[in-house]
Image (cartoon, rainbow, N blue to C red; front, side, top):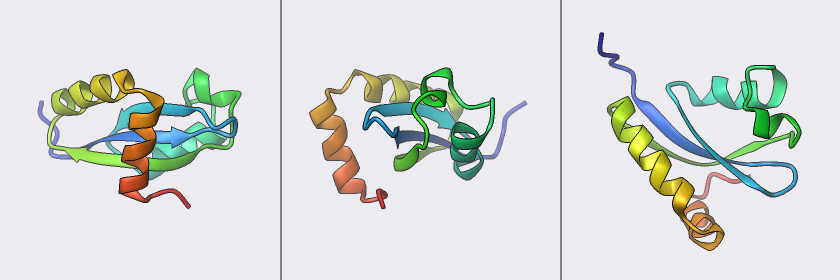
Length: 90
């Protein structure tokens, strides 16, 4: 069964300034889970609060997963450059 919902690749800035990358179909729900529930990633649970600093939208889970892998391989400087161009950080 194919979902019509877009997939999002996102980056979060954790309280310790580290970056976390993931995928989801609901950005707001997922960020809330990272901050407020046991459904957040193990990595972010000890680094709360987190803030959404970057996202990209894709039409399929496969595309989003491929992009997530590429983003995770980027250097910290390259990730910060993407974040500054995206300007989501508050």
